[in-house]
Length: 440
Ligand SMILES: [Mg+2]
Image (cartoon, rainbow, N blue to C red; front, side, top):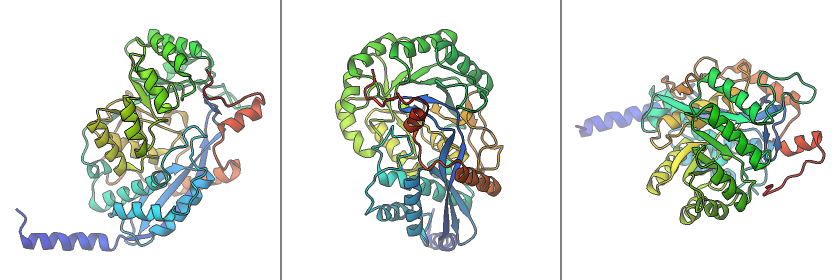
């Protein structure tokens, strides 16, 4: 039982621990890492993917890590927010959120979405807050000697399942040697790529990024995967470039071979029209990307599954809020991914480990990056049998490799890219390429 004395002792102890852990300094470092020519509905991945690495230092010598988009406009906002946070208590996540919002009060919200123009309606405040929330939780965990999953309510699973993320792709970027994956521009190529994913990583779910080729060809690829891997759940994501009639037609065709269909159309209304006709769960990371999207999507019965993504849902704390809302309204959760490094991966793993209703295998781009391209000390995060063991060391359970951060920042400076532009890169190779929505 807690008596008054104990209470005073614990309060004093808490004060002692946190009084000296105010935020002293924050560094925001853009980095770049090699990315294969992965095709999507707006073009093709450029030779380098950009990220920003946040390191929050406290007065008592702890540091916390966060990772987010590396677009120039986003980096500028991160730096403005970082200035506001000096002197703040990393245990007061509500204050951190308020200070970040204050730093954005005069912001026009233009640019810096980090998704190549594909998802542009995320909340500005949540997008900027996310990496600071993760870094503060990392610090809290290090000070308290607890993993972030414990701070988020405790592990409900010791391993987190991921899906193998298949992409149509070229064998190489123009002027480069072919990569280890080779080309995948037809069903046979996708099946070959899936074999590598399944053999090397043991994935027990597969997702195909669609919206690249005419829907019949992509449906053919899904059917070829289903034939090759009859026991593996499959997802297809055309990134909202199908019309309602196309989505209904292709959806019917794939009813027996898909686990879920992701963003067949772009809007809540159009996905609701598809969902009413097709006997497949619909998932989204495009029409429900912020808390404001939940009421209209629920009202319209537009989707079954929200692909959570802490990078645009305000970090791990607010992703837990999303989890509660999903439970309340009977939505299920999976997880979305962009090209990312180890800090984001660790954060995704802790969140999924501590969130009961993220119970689908989550997306990750992890296999698409080179092992040497990371800013953390290697060895903690690896995929075996399609899953990753949740780190148990304090905080995120990972350490910053300072030399690697410097090397990858130099790579950023050298590569010349300052914002993700899949469409511009595609048009530099194929000048006739046009953006269309819907495309089919
Ligand atoms: Mg998606």
